[in-house]
Image (cartoon, rainbow, N blue to C red; front, side, top):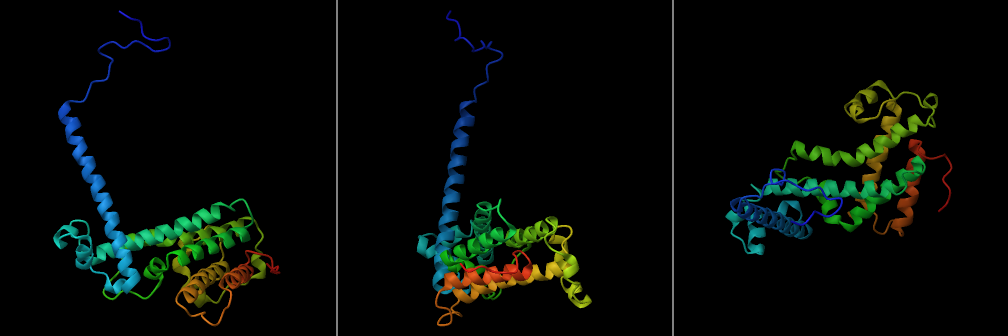
Length: 264
């Protein structure tokens, strides 16, 4: 009998792994194939739905129209999504997640830089994603869709970019580059107004800094929405240059950058 190769321990019949019965091997293949087909069809349904969004907006989304375009029976489509709202929810979660991934990737490229650099990267990452996917942006930041109420499952993906901005505020406090003595507390009514977001903020973020952060978050998405929805048409000639400058100015207002904004 031949010896095993050097460095390879010999196995006794008791130690050798038991082979799977043929019935198990046969049963696993169809199950995996079904999962692949389901994943592929789910992705195709979403692609057709996004095309519908581009042509008619969220209110025009129709499972029956998607089924017709895909050459499927509508009853078959309902095996993938229970109703229109379930499909909308999936698209909304995908859109928030894709947006967050773009912002996170942009921030990661400059993570070792200044807080101001990281803010600028997040802002440009968000805008670049929005201008490349305007219909997905409109789905999550445009007009509410009649009859649709977003379920709790959309909250976590929707919070990813705001939490990134909150981390910048926490790092600002941690670096002790934000002088809390120079920024008095907002009025009591304003402090009560922003109390719901306090639990999302890192430790040490003051009420004044929370207010500034909320203003910056609102301004960022407001600026992008104004651009994408045409409200800056014939008002701003160079969107890129203006956006870069305005978010730098916002960073100064928040305290993420020094007071002087250098020309770029």
